[in-house]
Image (tube, rainbow, N blue to C red; front, side):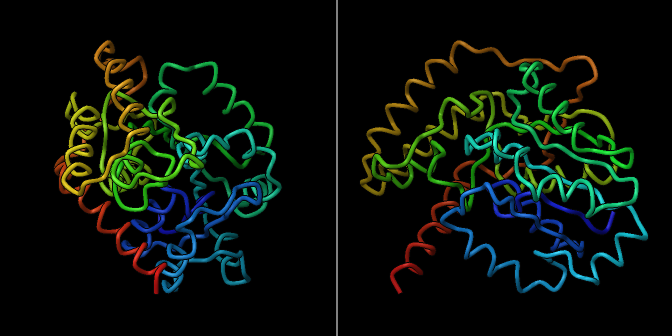
Length: 291
């Protein structure tokens, strides 16, 4: 695999996957669905990867001539759409159906990146795959399905709990803690790197893990400590976090189901260091907005 189509290259996970591919020399076509609202970091992300000659936002003649000769996998970071509460719009987007039907004409695999909650929400997951089948033709087949826990790190959107704790926003931002996994937390670049390896070499269904059964709790606690050290008072997010912490305490770590393999990140980013990277990126972004 040396090229790919990503449906949503500027989402939290989609961007990290895109960047990881470009760093390895992949040629990437990023399709931004028309129904997705632009994120506050999209312009900066576009500038960062737009300098790479291997990144395309439009299927120009060069791209089309290449994909007619070789299969091109289509990557759908459904995780981002779920966390943005916009998953219902994805299959209604005209660019989505066009991407599946025309931008990868050779027999190609479609790779879904799901939130790990979908491991146990089989009716919802199966419904999504059934919707996908209505768009796909005989040239498309499902590649590996990858399930991811809560993700944190640079470029985390305001709606995520850890970002709200580290940088409290006003009440106009809707928290989505009900959509975050309470079992584990994984640094975004670790997740992207592991996903890339699975997409290149594996088939089947995989649950990605940090290897730390207390990962989410530790990430929450470190977020609160960092916010406290900076005299930030994330009252709304802290309250939501404490409520989720109680729920997390009642949950048990689930094992793998039939056909699902657990894959651990070999050397995960230390939680404190990852959160500090998240803070530095956001602080640089804030400074850029002031200039």
